[in-house]
Length: 576
Ligand SMILES: [Zn+2]
Image 1 (cartoon, helix red, strand yellow):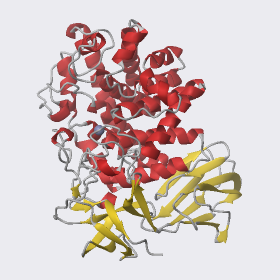
Image 2 (tube, rainbow, N blue to C red):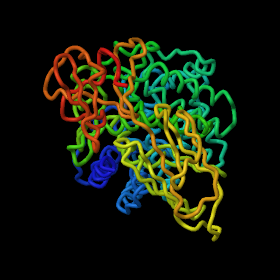
Image 3 (cartoon, rainbow, N blue to C red):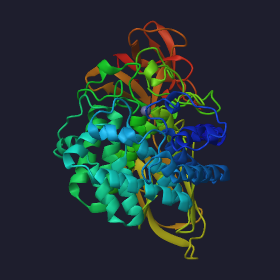
Image 4 (cartoon, rainbow, N blue to C red):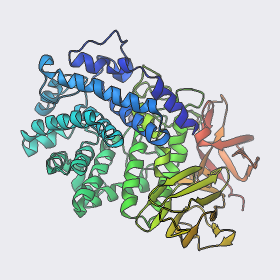
């Protein structure tokens, strides 16, 4: 909630005229005295204008989560201004439907194979995804019209290219074009959009993945993860099994062989060889965008296989550790870090200059990870509960109130997780049928780390609660029924795949870091595992002996403002 509130404060602060500057300039409209932005939205930055699509999505999510009318108003106002830009294309010399903050000539150069810098379709995807969100969430007709016009421009442009030429276009990063175009098909029922989506299938990446071959070494990570989200959406639209295989194989490869303890992946934005973890614990490990996209991919794949706990075990690991820890809690606008350094003595918000080198800022950063960041920190509520015809799934342990209008029920979850492993889930309301009871199944994820878990209803043991499975409670629920979930928290080791003596330490789901203040380190300290102990019952604070010193440990997500250690050289064994 603190993270969400800080990001929403930024979303309600950011100046709309400043954010419109590069769009208005490019579409030959007055910039209305607005100041220019810096960073990746500067008027001379090759792919300026990508952040604005994220803003549209984040405003929509803000409204979905909080019903804040200011977020709704900002989203709809911004879309109306973008519509004016698009409507001025004849004067600006652009083709019908084009909407962007840089020259349409970049697409000519891209198609000719002579684009020197920039990622044109990556930016178009952000704008389209934001417009689609505003259309879907608010029923905004302007967003619909602008999106369909822009989609028409994409169709016209790409329909003229040979298959080979289009594949060469796809060698340049193009974000989630497959996903957003498939979603336009699902939204409109117009098959044209599925045809356009399929033009963006990047076969040199998809073909080996369809055969479950790992060819990720050397690929730019965040260029590719959105493509796999696209294939899940295509599977949902078409039922073609190959699409699902591509996404599922990619997920298994990345989570199994390329993922660090905190749920992050990549080094210097790139996938390395399989299981090469220990040698890449550097200051530019774990780009934030990759995990934003892995989380999207994960919830899509889970929805196709909702008995499989491993998807939300990963989701919990990545959202609780890396994503929650991405923000600077000292900043009222919730600014974020690009990379998540895992080197000994790392400091959050410090990285290489090309990745920002610090926390993001109000108007001088606008990196990719700031864009995905404003989305991440406004959607913590979107993956706690799911339902199908017969079941309610509880996938995350987060204090929350679910207003389940279809059944006329309210489900309230009270917990201080992960400080405590207990969560209490209470049913209230009389049900839409007007009767006193409703029969359905509640399925609670029992994480793979939670052996010895218990689930009770109204104080009596209710069902088996096996780690790595769903505890299913089938019952005629009555208002006042209370489920108590107890997940025993223990120390766990999360070793590097390629070095079992180098590991992160977790307590239940929470990865811990050692607090080294301002001390510089050049190697992973030796942690005496047997010395680990929790020193507070009410907060996650721990102590241990590392080298010849006593060190304080706390959650990775709270690891800002000091030098920290995530991966340790191990000595001895964990306390029993
Ligand atoms: Zn990024």
